[in-house]
Structure formats: structure tokens, C-alpha cells
Figure 1 (cartoon, rainbow, N blue to C red):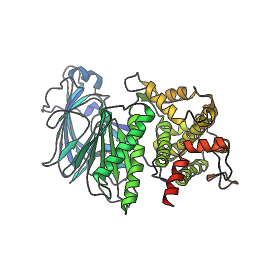
Figure 2 (figure 1 turned 90 degrees about the vertical axis):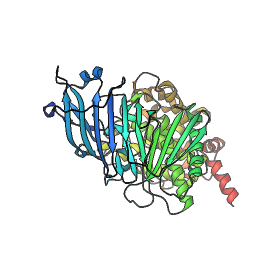
Figure 3 (figure 1 turned 120 degrees about the vertical axis):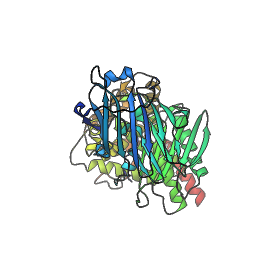
Figure 4 (figure 1 turned 60 degrees about the vertical axis):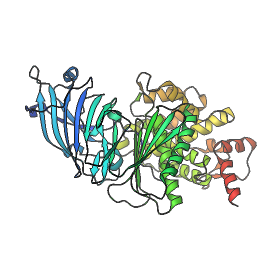
Length: 485
């Protein structure tokens, strides 16, 4: 089991500032801002180099002032500002506020594996533009972007296409552009929503198989959350720009776009299972956190619950065995129990990219599991952790006012009294997780009773324990085993 760096990372980067002392006069024009905060032109070449020119809308210039920032660190990748050279700025004569800019960006793929899915890069075959790490960090929200790419390259995005190569962006932090010369695209319908699948390279699964997996997972999450958060979704699947061994992958979901960068597995069955695992996790993020208007560091919730719901869905779809499900939970519990320092999940989320990423995933997953067991037991199987997810999504959708994520989630959890001990001890508190009481609800017991680690199903089960196990997918797995035999 790997606790990879996935999901949504908006607002988690660190800036580097360029002071107004570098302002010079330069002569260029990128056209009208058309009501957008920024108008940009990004010109890409096959050597991984980009030229960026832009101007701020007249009404926005006052917000910019004399400070010019770039993103320097994002999702564990640092020194991003070193990619920028040749900066030239134009100041407004009346108050010296920055009005226009031009600079170059070296988008050669970085060597760190995690960078491939989380920051912009370009090679001779294509790449990714994560708009937020390419533009000034001036709190701009909207933009009009013109992208010039080498002949034969395609641009795939969920942003609005105004005319060839020109896009209207409603949220620059979540805008993603997938580029490439040999990308294959298919559109699959799921209810009122459309899933666009953009794939490059060859894999041990077909494009149609990838589409079928996406549709199955999307439909299951739509049932959990009650509706789809948007009409169109984009899933991009590519291999790493540099070689990594089989089994490695990274992913990032922003807005309605999910990017999966991966190496392939040796055999077709392994490759399909790995894709299923990747999509179970990333499609969850279309709803949480990208479908809600929540702020702050509540990563423990949207990553921990994503990991748990993904594993649970794996059992329900016969993609992983129930034993594997228990093994994943056991390892998460072991990882958390071996932490030398104690931190609450809320504090760990604040320090996620300062060494606490694994704790956020592991402890967050175990907390989600305990919440599920507590709610299933209290309601006799009528409520589960899915009710928490649905309530948070329905109350704090993107159409609702901005709310602190921790406040929103904890207020929702407070409506179920059976969750209070879990919240106080393991989410808000830093106590070591003793799960004996909770796993007994489902007829589970530790395989190593001395350490309390490992999980197995008890040999003697009571009726309610059998019912709860069924809610976790135990009987789905047993029926699948029986068919094989």
C-alpha cells in the first residue's frame, strides 16, 4: 500500500516575491482583457520552453500594486521559481502599479516523481499546463488564455473555448490544460454528465475498458453524493515523462479535471486493477474537495475518506478481496501507531507537506473506517460514512458561501453523537487509535492480539456482526470466491 500524493492542492503552495524595484518599461500588447482579471498568451515549444506575456485588467491593477509573486513550492516540489527568467514589467504611470508583464519559463520535466502530476511540464510529445504555477500569484480569479502549441499538438481542457487556442478561465487555481500530439479522446455519457477520456501512450488496457471503469466508479460516487457536481469531466491518463518502475503513479484532481501519470503494470489484469484503484481515488475528488466551497487544511477528511471509500468500493466491485481491504486498513493503523510524535489530524493536515503527508492518509483512513463502523452499528446498518460525505457535499456545494473546511466537517459530524469519541480523541485529539471496540461491531479481531495489529474475521459471528460485515462488502467477496471454486 502506498500513501501517494494525490488530490486537490489549491492554496498549498508557497510564493516567492519579485519586488517593484525590477519594474521596467516594455512594449508589447496581448489585447483586450474582455472583463477578465488577466489576459495571457502562453507560447510553447517542443524543447519545454514557454514564453508568457500578459496584462491585468484596468479594474484589477489596483489589487496588484508593486508586488509580483510566483509559486515557489507546491505539493512537496520546491524551487519552482527558478524556472522563470527574463522578467520584464510595465508600470502604470499614475501610481507605478504593475500593468503588464512578460517572462520565460523552463518547463523541462522535473526529476521528482511527484512533480509529474502536480506542476506544469512539457517534453517533445506534450505535457501539462497547471495554470496556477505559470502565472503571477496576485489573487486573480478569472483569465483569458491564448495557448500556442507546436504543429500537430492538441489541447484538451474543461475550460470554455472561445475561439481556436483561446480559453475563458473561471478559476485559475483549478485550470488544467493537457497537451500532446498523439492523444486519443473519447466521450462517455453518464446520466446528464459527460466524461471525456484523454489517453496517450500504449497500455495493457484499451480505451474502452478505461471508459467502462470510469463510468462504473463515477456512477457509484454519484449515488453516494446524490448528484454530479458538474456536467463535463476530463480524465487524462499519461505515462511519466521520465522512466519509473511499474507500480509507480501520481495524480492530481482540480475542478472537473483529473490527471493520472503512471507507469504500466506487467500484465493486463494488473494494469486494469491499478487503473481502477487510481480512478476510485481521483474521481472521488470531483466531489470532495472540488465540488464544495470549503477552505483551509482539512486534507485529513478529503484524503482519508477518499482512501477509505476507494478501498471499500474496491471490495464492492470485486476489484480487491476483503482480505486485501482488511490488510490496507491494518497497515494504515500500524503506520499511525508507529509515529514517534503525536499529532491530531487537524494539525497534521496543516503540516502535510512538511513531513506529515503519510500520517494524513493513514490516520485519516482509519478515522473514516471507525466513523463508518460507529454509524453502521448505531443505526443497525441504515447509516454509514456515506451519509457524512453526502451531507457535507449537499450543504457546502460550490454555489454556497465560502466556509472553513474543518468547521464545516466537524459541525456535520456533530449531528451523529456516536462520532463524538472518534472526533475528540482521533481527529481533534492526538490519542493513539485503539480500535478494539469498533472492529468488534463487525466481528473483526486483531490477528496479533498482543499488539492489536492486523485484522481478521472472527470464527464465531453474531447476527448483527454478519449484517455489518455485509455492509462492508464481505458477502460480495465471498460470493465471488464461491463462483471461482
